[in-house]
Picture 1 (cartoon, rainbow, N blue to C red):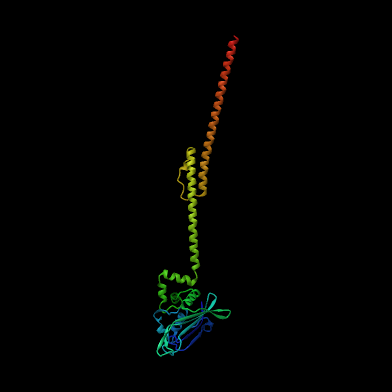
Picture 2: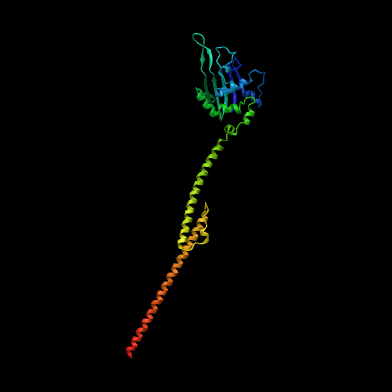
Length: 297
């Protein structure tokens, strides 16, 4: 943000119009506002705050105190601030509420507070807001600070800087985040945290599925035959894919060995049956031969 120009009329100790070209004053880099007590140094800073936010810091935020007591009764009290922020140039004009001479019947009447804002487009000023609420919203979006934050870190009142440094970290954090534009890092941290939570959920689901497979492998191995000692060990809380593969491999090995044993037993039983059949046939043949011999004798 950069303030280019300041105009004030019937504001504070200045009864007449005062215009400051801050670009010209800052041509050498920095400039100093100096003068005796009561000359209006603080009023210039108050005018900047009032022009932007419609208020000034501390107890001075009083409409009666904002209007110059030395101004002509018919003079209009107003402040105009021209500034640039986020690549755009703005002009905002504000007027506080104050008593002015009535146009009819004598006496005074209340001049209501007002605000207007223009944006420079193609080197022309285009009106963008005519209510105080609209102007405040645009200024906040452009500057990135509320009135309270602006007066704490930009227009810091005398003696308040130490109080800001001693403030609670939770109070300073949002101000410094907006000042240095670190909200994007907080947003990224929140998004990464949410992604990590989702990833942990998926990992938990995979772990549960792996534990189920390991338990099924142990049941299959137990049903097939004696369980190897390492199958009886409790599976880790978050088993790896390798652990699942190992459990399934053991279960398959046990099942395969049991199947091979069953097949061997079946083959042996079949062989015994063939041998018994062959023995029976040999005995029957001997009996038939003996009968033929007996008949021949």
